[in-house]
Image (tube, rainbow, N blue to C red; front, top):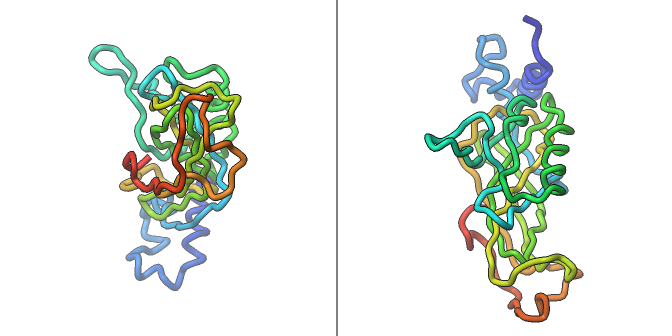
Length: 221
C-alpha cells in the first residue's frame, strides 16, 4: 500500500527532530503508526480560520448523523478532532440552526484539506446578545486550547437580552493531527480591548458592564 500524504507529513515532521527521536522512544523505522506520530506537533495560529454557528432554538448545534440514541434521537457532538472528509460528512447541523449557518458549516468542512489540516470542534455557550472574537488557537499532542474575548453583537443583530444560546466553534488547524483529543481549554476576557460595538445599551433595554474577566466563566467553551 502506498503511503498517504498524511503519513508523509508525519514522517517529515519526525525527520525535522531526528536528534530527539530517542527522547520520544520512537524509531521512524519501527513500524509504529505514522498518522499517530503526526500528532507530535505543537503550534499556535494567531489568526485562525473559525466559524461560529449558533442555535437560538435548541441546546446543541452539531449532531452525529452516524449515531442515534435508543429513542432515535441524533447524538450531540462534543469536542472532537475531525481528520477525514468521511467523518466531516457525518457531522450535521441540529434542528433550529439557521439556514445560513448550515451552509457555512457545510462549506467549512468541504473546503478543508484533511491531508494537511484538521478541524477542531468545540461546543460553546454564550448570551444571545454577545459574540466571541477568537484571538488564537494552540495545539500540542492530545490537547487544543484557544484564547478569545467577548463583546456585544452589532446593534442590527437580532438577539434576546439575558438569554443564553448554544454555539459551536469550528477551527481549521493548519496541521494534520490524529483524531485523539485528551484535553482542551480556553481563556479570555470581556469586553474585547478594541471594539466598534456600543457597550452601554443592548436593543435599548439592557445594559452590560465592562472590564470583566471571562476566563472559565462558563467552563471550557
